[in-house]
Structure formats: C-alpha cells, structure tokens
Length: 123
Image 1: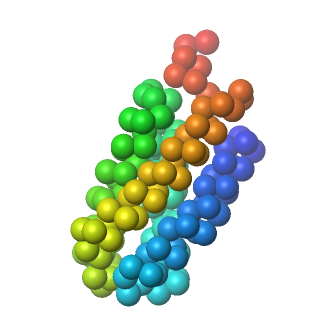
Image 2: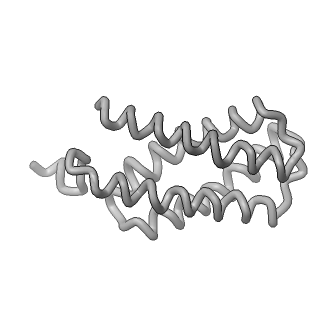
Image 3: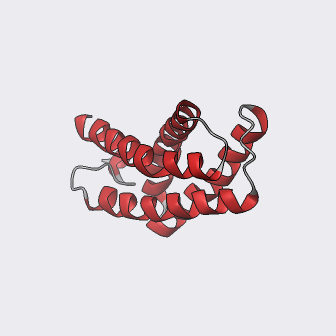
C-alpha cells in the first residue's frame, strides 16, 4: 500500500512540474486552476489506467489510453469549468507531453517486483 502511495505521489509531483507549466503557457490558466485540473486528472488516470488498464494490457496500449483520456478530460474541463481557450493543437501538445511521461512511468510500474499483476487475483 505504501508503494502505491509513493508511486501516486511521484506521479503527482512530476505532473505538477511538467503539465502545469505547459497549461499555463499555452492557455489563460491560473496556477491554481492548472494545478487543480492536473492533479484531478492525475488521480483519475492513476486509478483507471495505471492500476486497472495497465495490468490487463501492455505499456503502449496504456499510453494510448492516457493520451485519449487527456484529450477528453481537458476538453471537458476547458468547456465546462474554465475558460482557457484551449485549442486542439494545445491539447495535442499536452497529450504528447503526458504520453511521453506516462511511457516512462508505466515502464517503471511494470518493473516493480511488488506490483499486482493480472494473475494476482487468481492466486
């Protein structure tokens, strides 16, 4: 449980360092708006993709799922919560940056000897 919490905190830290400045540069996002949207997104993807989808598929499928979820999430956030003027090109840049970062996160998660694998529930 502590290992999972450590991975989540690492993901939140790295996302805060990389995604928040990109959002602030590309859009009219404030620091707190970008931080809250990014951290909510990070929690969502950690649960859905890193803990569930990655266990059932491979790294590239999980990265693709992360990138598609990036488009959907930030479109919804920009459309319904913030007026950031987020264009399709801006979302592509955010999704690519997030995809590259997640590729390395997933590789790290899959190397962890203590992780729960797809067959762990049958043992």
